[in-house]
Image (cartoon, rainbow, N blue to C red):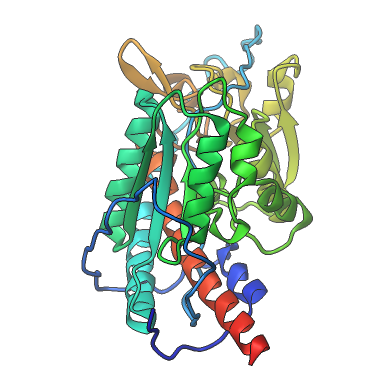
Amino acid sequence: MRLRTVVTRDLPRVLRGCQIREKDPTLPKTASERVRAPEHDDSCPRIGALALAGSSCSELIRQRVGFSDTITAGPVSAWAKGINLTPAKILRGAPVARRIRLEVETAARSFVEETGVLPTLATVLAGNAPPSSAYRDAISHAMEACGIAHVDVLLPVAATTGRIVESVERLNDRDDVHGVIILLPLPPHVHVLDVISSITPTKDVDGISPSSVGRLHLGLPTLYPSTPLAGLEILDHYQIPVAGTRAVVVGRGNVVGKPMAALLTARDATVTLCHSRTVPLEVETRMADIVVLAAGHPGLLHGEMIKPGATVIDFGVNVSSGRIIGDADPESIERLAGAYTPVPGGTTPVTTMALARNTVTAAYAQVAEFQSTTAGKS
């Protein structure tokens, strides 16, 4: 592959670009051309190590999906009944996603100009579960909107752990693939840890491999999970303070709950992580300035369970009577909350844009890693 001349940067400095900053970046005004990459051939041979070279780019950052940490709401007092406040501010994700998309478009276009290669994200789906298929389609649409190519790897539901791992390893070795995301949940017979552990850390744009999780909790540069990043992006966009606040995260899942608690802690919030054994839950949530919901339990949080003026970030995605609803009861919380994210239309659109940003971050990191390795051999 022939590459254009680029500026070398070491991997840690490039990866630092995926961390959240307190101030919004200057927005680009132009969009990149849309180009799609050919579909991945699951039978293709292994083709060797990374072959890209790196350059500078604007700071970049990146999750999604439902959660299974079910928490049942217990009886609560009527302490807040009868209180009438100004309706809560609705934290819509569309303007946040639009800002990130413009930034990623510019970064992706710069990457193409400097390397002659499209930033590319590969999704790996085993089976055809409707939620996973829908998320794959949303990812494909979002990547196209940002000028990022999408490689779709679809495996049968009966695929073994070994076959899925082999597909991931092939993607690891492809120089034209910069990010890999495993669409969860995997079929019951698959060993999930084996699969996610097989992702090369620099391509783990979902931040779920053991290496990425460990670096997150140690405060080291890494690709952070896109869903928690989406929540922080919304808080920053609407200028809701994090440092010095009390935050409660409801749900201890590995994809959102735990990493969200870690990211809020890194932002100097005092964080309490609640779960199915936290009883009564409202004792904790009433003390919180920020309540984050990632439990996968519809209508879990009611207005009586929060203090006036609290901010509610709802990652829950549940289907009830044919409608998509979150973990919060919006009709009751809007009477007391200062602000809340709606479901749908809150965190989800920001999540896919954060994933796009992580993909471009990963592309630049791999370029820098390759050039550093090449320079060491010369």
